[in-house]
Length: 90
Image (cartoon, rainbow, N blue to C red; front, side):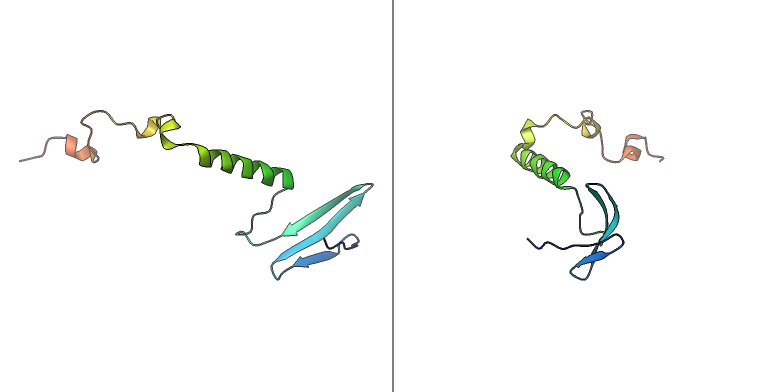
């Protein structure tokens, strides 16, 4: 682990695209600002770990274990194109 000392308004660079700036220091709390490209997710560690747990749990679910999607249920004999249900002009 790299340990750095920074003061308010000083920045740390990670690679070319990620900046971490010390925004405020109050007592034993440090507020940081993170600037990163949109394709790099930035989460607090506890949120990141919760996402990983949820993803692992979701990966274990079999499609047949899921309840049917009410929006995708179709009535017997329903057609993909509703205009096909109306009589055609001769």
